[in-house]
Length: 543
Image (cartoon, rainbow, N blue to C red; front, side, top):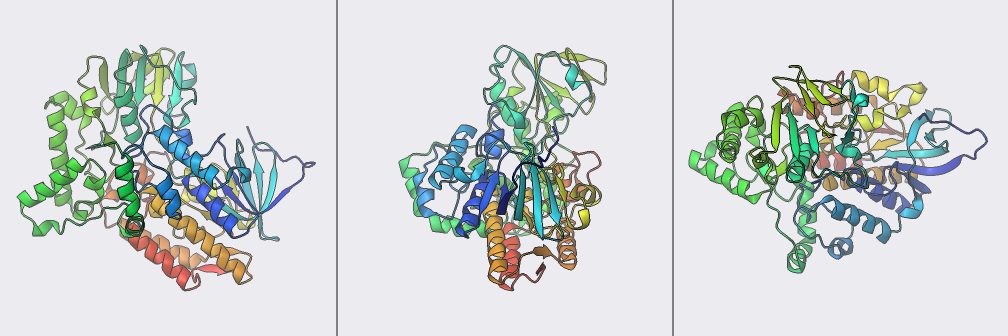
């Protein structure tokens, strides 16, 4: 349904609009209200939560520890909410964000079931004109997009989807009322982090499960102990330590690459480090072992082989399953690494079949199920699409955003994706964003760590402009160019750019190839952002 503007309806005039009511959007609304701005948030969903509102598929849960997947602006807020386990499931996380919204009295300034379809900049007024899908027109000085980096699901992926006689569900658009899968023949397409959570969760309850595997994943077994009063009291006592720690580590977690240089250790010492991190059951195996695995192919091979060995053992060294499920053509950590709980063992069940889509790709969906290139029709009752997102850029390009002179962001980003520190774009004044390309939030950060830092930077930038009598903020062309060049120089030193994954935009046909996430480390990124602010934002023209 296209947006329409009712010429007879009054125009809503605001100082700032925040799009999205997830982790970033809620905090951004809170911070701009603190500045005294007349601000409103617009949210497509019927409730708050962002990722944790939309992604309610079976098995959805954190893979950042609860003690650091947190807001840090209030010690009281941190202490008052007590998670029940290390990696809480989706319902608890959605409940937490609703609790935050209520505690901060944010709902009165949020419009739910309201999608922004277009945002056009007016050169004459220096303001943005927004139109919602429902026909409301909004005039605002500042536009802050907090729509998430994985919020543009790839839904229409296969020919013939509309012909299927059963149910098709995308994991990111899972019905609130749930889906009854008991006793059904179910297909899951995709084995990324989301697909793995779904597969391990539903295998025991379905009659038959067919998993369509194209790109196998390295993985880490999750260790998920329960948290009680004592555990949370211990974390609460470390609030200031944890708050400072996460802002300076490589990926915004409370752990970092502290093992020491790979070359300085014996093979036995390296094995011990990897084994210890493996047993920790968190993403520390990926983001706190040896950074050399991101740069040095020989180190990458050794770390990858450690993980492959663990996976082979769990699969009983079954040749067919090992070929289907264990990666060999890219290194551990160069794709998103999932945490899992018994995922590999699912394939040892009698009711589960893995379909090798490298050998026989999906050709189309037919009324009875999924047809592969060998002509076989896999008959099922339900198809679950865990096929990913137009990551980083999709949330912005699916909205009709037009900047100075009517320039189109969708058209420009179809040629080359560019930002200034992932928070502004040259040619689009007073448009700010979080979780956008060329910042760690696009993939390589514990999301609340980086989202909060970006929200605070955006807020401080707006406050500075207002204090100095400026009404428009826009990155200079030269600063954006220097940031893109720096980003690419850092990225091209890594093995990440040598792989095909959503990190590189490779999962979307025609998407320009560029590492979506800044790979220079969260601490280094925050230092550069802080320097811009301390120097009076020299990379940003204000007028």
